[in-house]
Length: 73
Image (cartoon, rainbow, N blue to C red; front, side, top):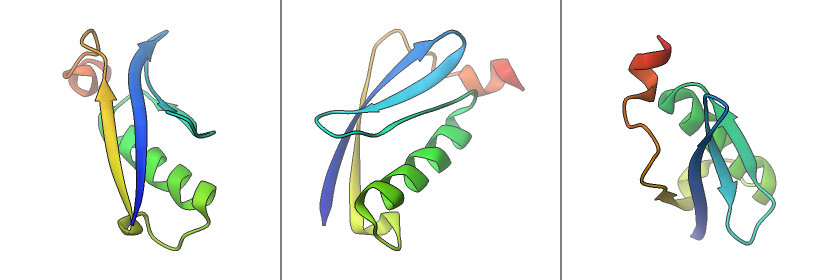
């Protein structure tokens, strides 16, 4: 299993995910879309058929809005 650590932060109204020590970066307006983007980015970066082969660890900055999805709907 691969451990993938991502730093989560907000920028210009988007929720962003940046890989710690790896070249993964993605963003979205909603948490659901961000998680989908993260899974796709991890699959592509590691060339694995399913993100289930990776453990995704999120380091969420305190100022990231947990309600960002509701605000953008």
